[in-house]
Length: 534
Image (cartoon, rainbow, N blue to C red; front, side, top):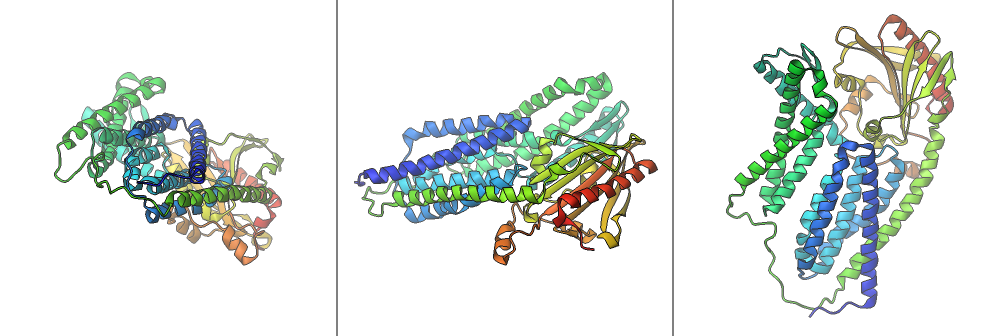
C-alpha cells in the first residue's frame, strides 16, 4: 500500500498548489486586462470557463500510477527557474507583450504537470492534459506570429475576393488590401483578416475533437483544418460585402450590419468544422481515444522517495524567486523612467503648439515599448504634424521591426518617393532622417520623416534591413550583459522618432522638416544619452 502522507508533506503540497493557484489568478487578471483593451478577444473567457469545467468534471475519475520523481523534475525545474525571469520582464513590458502571457502560461502548466507526475504518475498528468492545453487558446497570438499570419490571411482573403467579384459582374481593381469598386473602396482591414475567427474556430475545433473522443492525431488535424476554413469564410465575407455595397449601398456593410455578417459567417465556419469532424469520426486503425487508458495500472507499492514534497519544494522556491524578480524589475523600471522621460517633452516650441493624443491599445500591445509619446502639433499657418517617440530600454526586447512602408502599405498607400533628409548638420552630430512620400488614390498623400537609433548611434539603411530580418520570440535582455561589463547605468536601448503629415505638398514637407529639426533638439535635451556623436 502507498504510505499515508505525513502532516508536513501535506502542508508542503498545499503550499505548492496554493502558489500555482495564485499564479493562475495573476495570469487570469492579466488576460482580463488584455481583453478589456482588445474587445475582439472578449469571448476568450469562455475558453477558461470551459477548461475549468472540464477539469472539475474529471476530478472524480483521476487515476493514479507510480509517482515519477525523475519525470517530474524537468517541468518543475523549468517553472522554478523561469518564474523570476517572467516576473522581472512583466515589470519592463509596459506595452503588454503577449509573448509574456505565453511564458506565464507555460510556467504554470509546467508546475501543474510536475505535481501531477509526482503525485499520480503519467496517468494523472495525461488525464488532465486536454483542459490544460485547451486553456492556451485563451491567450492572444504573439506579435511575431500575428503580424506575418495577419498579412498572409489578408493577402489570401483579398486575392480570392478580387478574383471572385468579377464572376458576379462587378469589375474590381486591387491596390494592396483595398478593392476599388464602382460604389467605392472596400478595404480588407487587419481586423477583418480572419485572425480572430481563426483562434475562435481553432478552439471550437479542438473542443469538438475532444467531445468526439478523437485521439491526438485526428484532434490536431481537425484543429489545423480551421486555417483553410477561416480563409474560405473570410473570402466569402469580403465577396458578400462587395456585392451588398454595389447592390444596396455602403450603409449595409457598416456598423451592426458588418458585425452581424461576421457572426453569421462564423457559425458557417463552425458548421464546416462539425462536418469535417463527422468525416474524421470514421475509426482509424491504431488511433485511440484521448480517454483510453494507454498505461496499465502498476502494482500498488510504497513510495520511499517521497517525490511529492521535493517537487513541491522546488516550485515554492521558484515562487519566492519570482517575488524577488518583481522587486528587481520595479527598481529597473525606475531607471527606465529616468532615462526616457518622454512626458517632459514640451508642448510648445519654435512656434508649434501640441496636444497629447490617446495611444491605440493595439499599437501599444503590438510594439511592446517601455515608453511611448503620441502628440499632434500645429503652427500658426495651420500646418499639422503627428509625432511618435518610442523608447525600449533594451533593444533585444523590441517586438520585431515595424517599417512605415509595411504599415502604410497595409492601409492601401504606395511609396511615391524616398530619400534621406539631414535633420542636423554633421558638425552638430548628424541625424539623417529617412523621408517617405505615400499616396492612396489621386488626392490622399502623406509625408513621413523618421529615424531609429540604439544608444547614440543613428541607424543606417543596412541596420534597417537587418532589423527586418530579425526572427525569434524573445531575445536575451541587455541587463545581464550590462551587469557583467560593469557599466549598468549606460542606456543602450532603442529610440524611434517619427513625424508624419496628412499632405505631401511642398509646404507641408518644408514645415515638417523645420518642425523635426526643433523636435530633435528637445528630444536630446531630455535624453542626453541619445545625443549623436559629433
